[in-house]
View: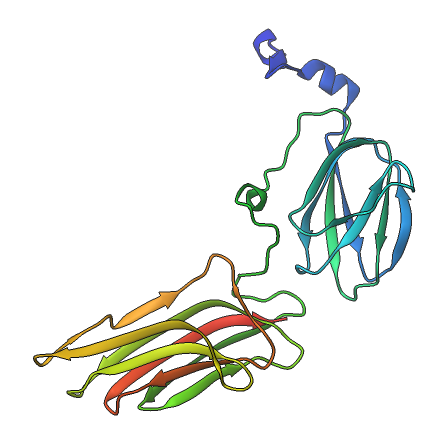
Length: 247
């Protein structure tokens, strides 16, 4: 190896190659099997939960000695400390897995956790195709002078809204309002997601005709709550669309 290539960033690559240093290892845990303080003999400086079937998948880890406190790991969370062994504990979680990446030896290796950098402590699946145990919901409707329930959150589930769209068109001469909103099980208004208020001024209508809602973190809507689309004008056409998933 060329002398200029032997040392990059203070690392002696000839020594690295000669010692065959293990930079990292990976364990895919089947969480359907319960564990209590299962010992793993690894020497390292960090452990990181890189992937999981869903946001609820979890395992607890204690380092070096059994009297140490357990620390919970979920997807996107890591721990940095020196250890020569660790113990894993988890309840039986049917159909779930969790992948751990473990830093071994004193190697220059780091995984960027974008969520941690942004101050996000948990993640939910926001892709169009839901993960195992997630039921995708995508529905739309057009109403004129009426209220329509786009979706009622299933009992025992939580609905994660990842996107919504509202479009309004008024063919009449009166002002009107189009709204996409959420009520609780008793039909009491909880919050408005999108609305269009078209005001008639000398025969012209002032207002935005379409808008979207795409939150950085999906909006959690509890069981029994309803997502509704409403048009208040007899000549006002309100078109609404929502996409999300239930867990």
